[in-house]
Length: 251
Length: 103
Image 1: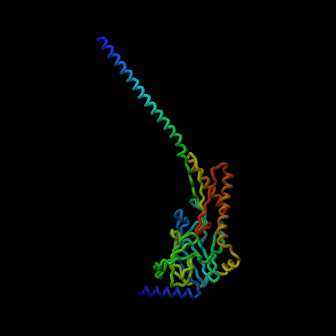
Image 2 (image 1 turned 90 degrees about the vertical axis):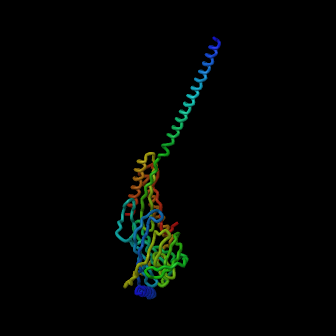
Image 3 (image 1 turned 135 degrees about the vertical axis):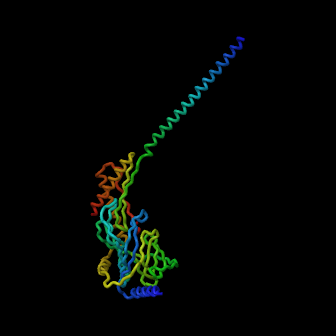
């Protein structure tokens, strides 16, 4: 009885906070396998979704220490935060971050919640909060989302959202990316929205611009490798081959 | 009596001649088989070097998080050791180049 009372109180708190235009930070825990579809390089992450009125900022940081550089034939250039996304519901804008070879941050625009969700009718509770299941496809990958209708905010981790309730758990069909809500805290100070608003007002490039940037970056690297192979070894069998594997479809 | 002895001798001689021809035929068959075997072995020995060609592929990665680039070097050589060494050199060179560009 005491537990139910506490859960109801928490739900009431979350629901009322969503309306109150105050900054809240929803904490998620989960994993990401950066060798998705090819092997296992799964690491643990903590996701943070800060909602401040009509705006939100999602970041996902790796737990534990990570060493940048060359190890075991892998050059680790993962930025501190992956899957960073800013959403502005009032202007229907979504910005996402891409970190290049030099770990320079670039922001691109994308469509806000283009995914078409299908309700499956299944229900379960997450942290005592009743949730409903929805499935959808986004940029070539199938996702499952468990959202809480009692928290009337169409938000979610990363680019996911657009459901009639906050997404508390989300994962892809192969379970390479999986986040589950663990707690919510109220923040005295939110994040700097001005930084993102200035970017929105400066005609950011869209998703096609991002895809072109990635392809260009890697084709330059491929060209450098081919040139080096020709210089070092005339008549060598072949130059190294480069293959890009992107979480989101960039073709 | 003399006639009988003579005819018996002729029959024996004819039998022995036939038997020696049979032995020669058998010897010839065996020889033929041997040649056949030799020629098969030669065919096999001509194929073996092709089958044993080593193809070594070594892979490295550039991990940007949601984007990962796979660098692969494939070298084919009759000597597996040479193929391994060449592929390792190729990958090392490619990773060094990548590191020099980005770090």
